[in-house]
Amino acid sequence: MHRSRFIHRIALAFVLASSSAAWAAQPEVNTGLPLVRLQIGDHTVTAEVASTPEQQQTGLMNRRSLPANRGMVFVFAQSQPVCMWMKNTLIALSVAFITTDGRIVNIADMQPQTEDVHCGQTDVRYALETPLHWFAQHGIRPGARVLGLPAPSR
Image 1 (cartoon, rainbow, N blue to C red):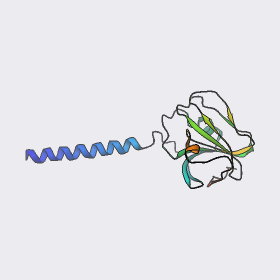
Image 2 (image 1 turned 30 degrees about the horizontal axis):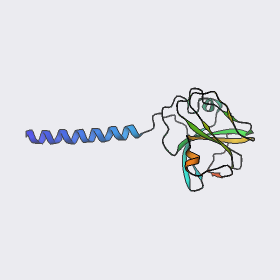
Image 3 (image 1 turned 90 degrees about the vertical axis):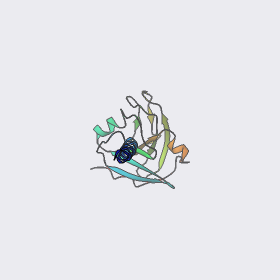
Image 4 (image 1 turned 90 degrees about the horizontal axis):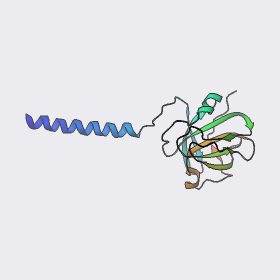
């Protein structure tokens, strides 16, 4: 009987440890924002959609991590000049500025908690933020096409 209680405790400890590891792997923030799966060449990124001014103002601020192949896409009502900054953003990011037809205009690397301004080189409809160097690590450059971008809200 003592041995069976010991085995039960080991099994319970294993289940708890596995659950803790799985829990730790979950995103730290559940924003409730819709998710979209974007395709760029052979690569996929799952992005939260920030389409309202409030969502865009908050962006990825106050996050302590961003999983690989995850990001946030900012969807603007019309093609316009767009600049991003990193005030209150705790993680380093890269941003791609994207035209209405899904073409990446330029990509910028952004350092956390700075007020440096990073702008699209022309009017854009979207900005896609990913973990720092995600685009470079996947060989994605200006001119690449992003598929699956959400339609702007009316």
